[in-house]
Image 1 (cartoon, rainbow over the protein chains, first blue to last red):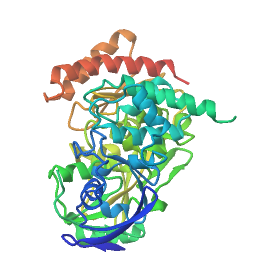
Image 2: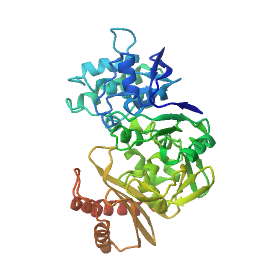
Image 3: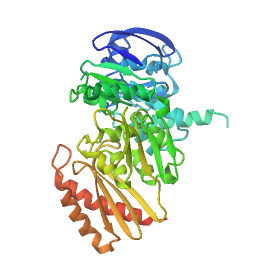
Image 4: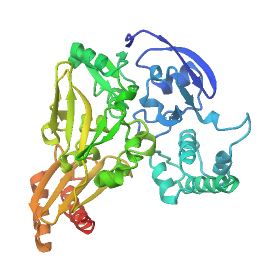
Length: 168
Length: 275
């Protein structure tokens, strides 16, 4: 049984956006704080810190996870992806990100990284989602600027483009 | 919004988890998905010296169907149940309720057993378990016992679990022939905790309605098959029996009104799908 002592910083290693990262964390340290404060990965935004707003969503072994409800030590040995993993290269946007820009799916942009991450996870498992499906998925996020209409359009547009570019 | 310091334990199997729990008792908390536990720790509503993380126990992440019931292990996520191919056929009530349990982003880690162990009066899974007359398997290093839902959940966030026991599985009775099932809820946002949630199980000779979010725990009422003109009065009596209180989301009167209107709606819905 793995036992990690309270108040002590423990070595953790995991794969972040395809590269191995290392650091030290107390058991109480949230994954969101580890990513931001220890690794400087400020693309992970933090808002409510109790799992309601979805801003801090990352992928943990391909599944969406609230990083504010995950302890950094839980990520040890696993794969974590942030919004950075979406873009094909520095300065380039993914098709989903392009659609968000085209459809004005963000205003202040604070909630956007989490929404992009979970939308990408959603699209990987849902080919041809309905508007209702997309709205239900977005119910796991809070955006106080947009009213979500642009996001719904952008996600549906991306789903359509991917479906038409995939040979059947 | 950060938890207080704690020791983190990650057992390699169930026996290790139960031994740790036997030793640490009230000083330890079992964590599966952490979707209920960690917010409470972040809020400092709950402090614990030890967290026992069972999320990695693959042998506990099962959904097993027997002729009369479906057993779901402690590490099985809500997303796994929602994606289970037999869900609509074997557990029609859960098939309707699961999309209301949290969100796509939380069901991926939140567990079925965790939600029931947490026993929030307004969450959907404890309501379904109570309405279907399901049961909870409690295991400790010394014994295993099975409690029906009504014996297990004794109040708001309160269960009959002993300090050395862990909820290792829950059991939902499978659909019965000649029975209709329906679920509905009112929440501020799809996937949020219900202001009021209702679940109906109806046959030609009996009606049952379970209500969550109004009383201290999910509450079930049984009637013989009521005539159409008797349903509203029966629901009204039940709504007053439940009590309910005012909070930031709704007052007790509104909650009673939801019992009357949503209750009627799910009873009618369940009658329509009598099979």
